[in-house]
Image (cartoon, rainbow, N blue to C red; front, side):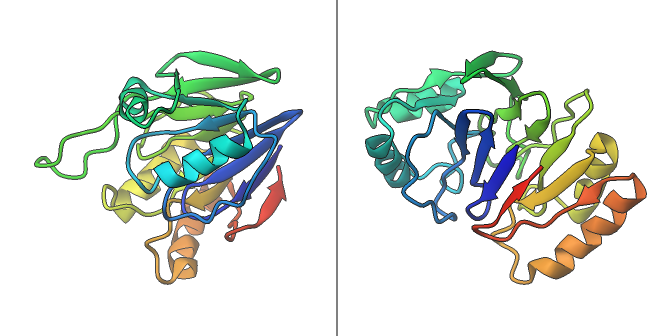
Length: 210
């Protein structure tokens, strides 16, 4: 599996013949990708789905299927964008690669802010990306895109999440708000190392084979 990070939480996953893009939001610089098979959207927040970026990708990839939950489906219908609904415990197959929905709700930011729906994704039964949530997948995780920093999460919660999931390999996402990412990433690496997780930092535009 090859994964390329385009900033914040936007990831390009290549597995077998499948070319899958995740969360092309407005904190990411997404190139003019072609031959995409699927675009996965975890939730409706703009840092995870930019309507302008999505429309450009659709023009380049008219056959690509867009997957997300019911709330994203309803929102994108108003933009004349077709979305195949994929929610918690639901499954789709793209180019012989299984994509599973994991989780239902965005993490709580504050009690005054309504929750939105959030669907994480398990791809090829080895790569897990929770989106903006601390969902425990209740299965072994080979590779994980780990939310490193967010307004809805303290460092303590992040550490507890790492200790609970214990992926074999993890790399940080949702880190566009970090002015000095290295210091924060290093603090997480310490706890991942304690549970036997290999911690790998992907810089924007960088690819890595897993």
